[in-house]
Length: 233
Image (cartoon, rainbow, N blue to C red; front, side, top):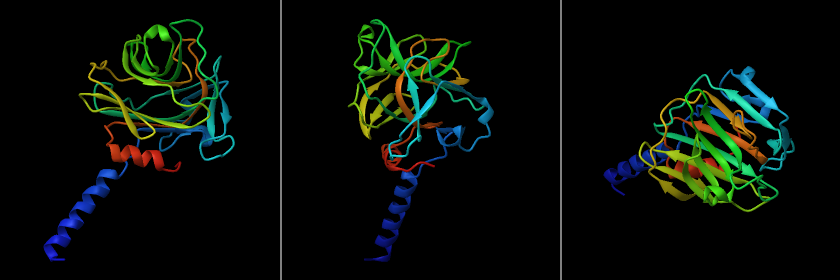
């Protein structure tokens, strides 16, 4: 191997490692100590009947559990992400039963990242057939669908990632790229994060959530796979 070839390979290795390296998330929410890692915002957490469940590693009381009728977990955001700039939202979920809906326009909100005064936001979760969706959806505040995906298997943990790169929305499920769209995002900076419902609503999620991460950039496929395979903080 020539010296020139060696340096080329070393250069490519450095680029590859940098490409896979995960940035520090703007927010990371886990059941551990009921806090946002890396930020002194513990007193901005609002818990409503939220329980715990076994996480994907088999740790009892290691994940958040929502009963589908009243439970939610809220966080006021001091650092506000931009909806119309590159953003990545990553989380794990598990459900035991198929979602039950009160009517054809019902939903079960896993995540709502919103500003109710500006009437803007992103919502993630299950929606009833009245929305003409596949079931596991991403939608704007107000209900306009951004992405549709099939509901995954029961009794398993699934890794979900939403990426907006400034031009297109992409959904990843368990590391695999799924649906894409170029729907224009809403503009603004959400100031509140709610898990298990949406602010002022009654569209509750029933199941477990864990390891929510929000990044102010569009993660690459390799970085998403790194998230899929990483341990908790």
